[in-house]
Length: 438
Image (cartoon, rainbow, N blue to C red; front, side, top):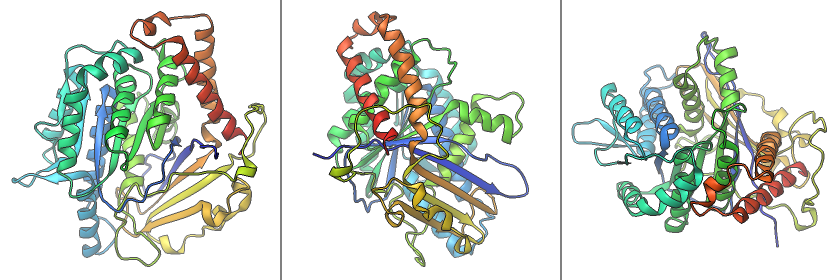
């Protein structure tokens, strides 16, 4: 029996232009259990909780602004093809010509959803669908168990019906992009529940969860419990987890963008910039004149040879590594001189685990169409050991609380038993061990 490896993916984005912009952001991606060969196109985005809805708005706004940027540094024909491809992926169109985001908005309190709908409509550029939202008047109280065990079953039919109606508007479905946080109750708990339902009902469509890793010194005392429960449940039902660390993005705003008083809006705009740099259209192959039909079209399945299965004995995390060993790297180049870029450094076998050759571990996507007015930009999506230390730290903090039974009663009264915690700890320790032994 082969061992499933959770996929850690870090994303680095570099821009070259006269003005400074969002530079490098670190995120990570776990990947799940099934290979996919999708030739379809449209993506349905599910925005969950305060965090998911605020980031979702910024993502759609960044995608629309970029696709309608007149300074694409390419021919008019190529720019039109780029716009059409972006629109088909992320927007549908109403009779009056205003694009409508292919999205479902979910929260257990109405305030943020109302603000998000209003901001999109007031932009005049695009908007959300009139019947694409679900909200209630009672939140989850930062309790993962309440979001997962109470709100989930209670509102399952209504939420899944909204998603089904959005899917039916697509000529063909590439997959789902689920935006949520790990620290709170609605985004994390209800998000895990919804993802599980998507896997049950759309098992052949890719599910990618974009989750926000909480600040190391967060304000929610049970955020580590919420995080390990979220990660362990998504590991079983999601195909890929794209993880952004709040601390890392905050550092980008402070050091690279020189923002003095950093707001969540600043952070969300950086996240949207990074996600847009990956999801916007690229050519499917060297010399191709057709944009890639499936923006999520990566085979996320990785299985090491049976003879090279890693042991579960945990190596010391204090060992100083010169770099993070990678399973795979994807480089996305946009703008001027993309075809003359020197990519030799990415093909060095020393970068990769010994059971994958660089020819199988490295891919590059290109387009001469610039991103967000930058003359040149590059996004490096790397499946590596990047997440080992943050994951080990959050599991350790949660275990210390659990060992003293701190706040466990808040979860058990909503049906999450101590055995559920232990299962989550065991699974995530195996994930850490597998990555340490790459």
